[in-house]
Image (cartoon, rainbow, N blue to C red):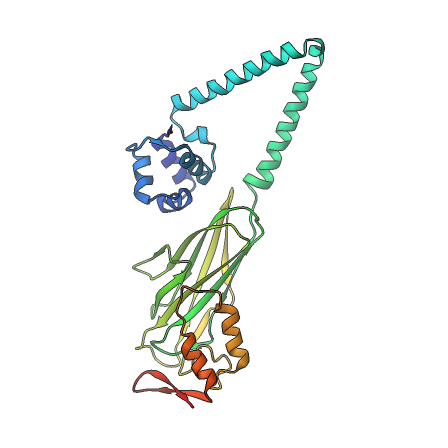
Length: 305
């Protein structure tokens, strides 16, 4: 257990423009716990949580500890160094004349290593890209999937924030990974995600409100932000517009059929996403039949045998 300084934690967080939700996700606790830490209600926490907290704030553990706690740890380190120094003096009495050179070499190695870490690890800029896969058309009131593929050049673990702004006439239903939050005013979708891979696939299911007019176009836009010493924000590329029509979203060429290539594309892109019901049964039924048509009365597709 260690004692953290809540004021220091809050100051570091605000200086980096981080939210309590971000820290809570990074450490693996609730936002209420972060609030209690910052307000000194729980000044003593598990050391492993303190280490994660310091990592998320991009500082050393000692920098968020209370002064006397950090001082005691510093004294302990100095005491160990003195003991090691005495042992070295006892074992190497005949080569004390070259100790300054050894110290100088050691300092040089540490300095170079620190500079290397600062430039290429602690403050490495992560190149990140995101691409959206959006159907060209959808029918009103029927769910459709949106896939966002995020790739980066960083092999280690890091956090990213994905934001997706959907049109007002669009209602999100579910997602994999699950939404971290949905803005009640704007409907914007947000994820805070700990990435352990260089490629992550986000998928969400949405629906255009039944009252929308046919032919109307809906616009999507978003950004992905990653933080590893430096913040890097990139727009989500790929298709950003879909049109409301009487066509099924999987019928890409709009011929009122789902052919072999189209159903294979669905399986390739969505086959590994198990937590979202994107209507594969209906797609298979349309593929098995000779086509489909839109029933204006029922607001559903009818399969042509």
